[in-house]
Length: 266
Image 1 (tube, rainbow, N blue to C red):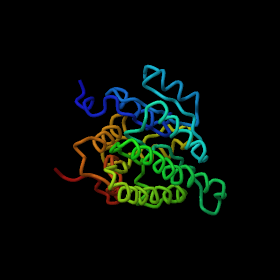
Image 2 (cartoon, helix red, strand yellow):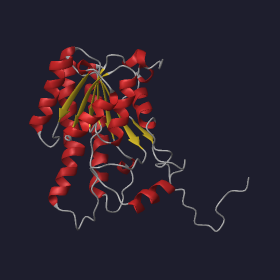
Image 3 (cartoon, rainbow, N blue to C red):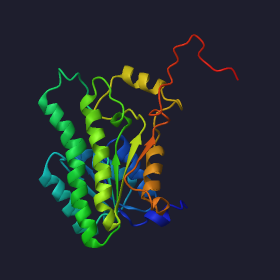
Image 4 (spheres, rainbow, N blue to C red):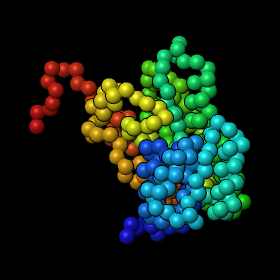
C-alpha cells in the first residue's frame, strides 16, 4: 500500500483544469491514495470520461463545469465543494492556456484570456477556498501550477511567460498572508508534456523542446503528482511560498553544444 494513503485518504482535493494532461495525471495519483476529488474543467464531457476512468464512487467525486473567466462560476465551484464535502483540504490551480503569437499580432482578447485564466482565476479560486478552509478550521494547502517560462522569456510566448511570472508572485503573496492560518501555498513548475487539446502545439515545436531536455525526455505521469504530494504532505510542513521545478533540468540551462566536439571525454 502506498504510504501516502495515510496522508491523503479522505482528503478533499480540488483540481482545476482536471481534464487536461497534467490535471488527469494529478487526479489519478490522488484517487489511488484514497482522496476525495472535485474535478473542475469547462469541458463537461471530458470530466465524465475522467470520472469513468478513475472508477470512483459518486460520494467520492464531484464534477464541476467551471468557466474560470467567470467569477460567478468560480463561486459556484466553491459552494458546490462546501455543500458536498464541507471544505477543501488541497486546492491545485492547474488550469492554464498558452496561445502563441508575436506581440504585434496578438489581439487584446487573447491577452485578456491568458491573464484571466492563468492569473485572475487562481487568485479568486485561492481567496474563496482559503475563506472556506479558515471557517472550517482546516490547515489547507494550495499548489499553483507554474512554468519555467516564469523565469525565461520566450519569443511568441510573452503573454504566457508574463502570466506565470505573476502567478509565482501571487504564490508568495498568498503564502505570506495565509500563514497565520497555517495554510501553505507553493508552486510547481512541470516539465514539458505535449498533448493539450486546449493549446495545440506544432510537432516541430514538440520535437525541438524535447530534444533540448537535459534528462532527455518529456514529463511523465508520475513526475508532477509526486512533487505535489510531497509539498502537500507532512514532510513539507515547513515549506511555503516556494517553487519546485520538476522539469528534467530544463530550467537549469541549455544543452545545446556549439563546439565541433559534442561530448566530453570519459
